[in-house]
Structures are given as C-alpha cells and as structure tokens.
Image 1 (cartoon, rainbow, N blue to C red):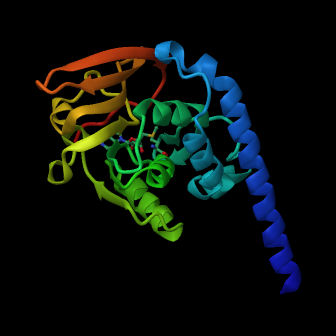
Image 2: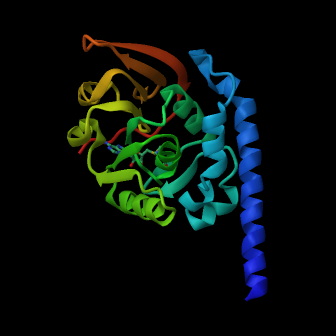
Amino acid sequence: MASAALVTASAAQQDAADRQRMVQEIDAMLPLAAGTSGVARLSPRVGAAMTEVPRHEFVPLEYRSAAYRNRPLPIGHGQTISQPVIVALMTELLQLAKTDKVLEVGTGSGYQAAILSVLTREVYTIEIVPELGKMARANLERLGYGNVSMKIGDGYEGWSEHAPFDAIIVTAAPNHVPPPLIAQLKSGGRMVIPVGDFVQQLMVLVKHADGTATTTIIVPVRFVPLIRE
Ligand code: SAM
C-alpha cells in the first residue's frame, strides 16, 4: 500500500512539473500566437489557472502522456481539446474579473470550463454532442469545479435563462457571430469567437450600451465547425 501511495505522489509531482513547463512554453509562444491583440505575456491570473488545472484529467487515457504538450488532442466524436496556447490567448482576451458570469459554447472535454471556473464566479457551458457533454460533466464534478453548470444543446442559441453574461467564449467556429449570443452579452461585455468557414479569424466583440458591437480581428485560427441542430 505504502509503495502504491508513493507511486501516486510521484506521478502527481511529475504532472505538476509538466504543467509548469507547458505554462512556460505558452508564455514564450504567446507574443507570436496573439496576432494584433497586443497580449505579450501570460497574466499572473491566467498563468496560475493553467498551472493549477490538471489537463491530463480531461484527455482520453491513451493521450495522457501527451496532455502537457502544447497541442490539440482528440477527445472522440471527431472533436478536440484545444491547443493550450489558444486556450491561454482566448482566456486573456476575455479579460475576466472574479465576479464575472461567463458562457462557453463548446464544452468538449470541460478543460476550458475548468480554467474559467478558477477565474470567475459562475460558468455556464453548452455542448451539442451528448456523449462529450456527459464526459465533461463527469470530469468537472469529479474534480470539484462546483461553479460550472453544463447543458447539452445547440450553443448557437445561447442560454437565455442565465443571460446576460459578462463574457462569452465560443470554442467552435460558426460562419457568422450568432445574434442570440450578442443579445445575451451585457453592455460592455466581451465575446471571443472564431468565425469563418475554411479560413477562420479569431475575433473579439465588444458590446456597447446602445446594443451595437465592435469586432476586432485578432489572428487566423483553425477550429472545428460549430454544428447546428
Ligand atoms: N472547449 C473545449 C475543451 O476545453 O475541451 C474544446 C472545444 S472543441 C474545439 C469544440 C466543441 O464544440 C466540440 O466538443 C463540439 O462538439 C462543440 N460544438 C460544436 N458545435 C456546437 C454547438 N452548436 N453548440 C455547442 N457545442 C458545439
């Protein structure tokens, strides 16, 4: 028993060291990945969240040894957990406050939702593939991310019962910004979203008090398409 406990402890130490190295790599890559955004460094808050959240718990067993490489990985059903540097960039672009209520479209593994959970008050996340949604919910519950609510459905429509949101992050690419998501964003709120069919651009949308919005193109990206029900 004692030796099994030692093996578990040293595996946890190894995971923590690998995570630390991944965060250093993200920090070094961020100026290149950040396009026009001006994000030059990982902020201490986002860096701490990415150092804390155990990415290996969100990937299928066969990919665990690659969990702390800076790359997307398959999670089944033709979907992926996003590349860590892109998770970092999108999270930085949201400019989250601890008091924020955030909507994520595209739960996937639940990893991005866990990062949001550490940084904000309340997280709502929507996944269209039921099997992924169930897996993500199980991951988030097992790891104790209690401020995350998850539902299975079409995130294009948002989650009106919990709107308005301070911030919205979309992790699959529609070919236009879904109007229901703009409607569910607070005045002054920010949305980070990849938009496009073949060529996609990561955009930041800021909603103004009069209901209009300004979008800024940040960098070309490659996401799975947003599926419609
Ligand atoms: N954020 C995820 C994570 O941390 O693992 C990665 C997201 S993966 C790149 C995109 C996800 O969006 C997939 O799980 C896909 O099934 C989901 N998706 C696609 N269209 C959707 C829609 N209309 N509503 C909700 N989720 C959708």
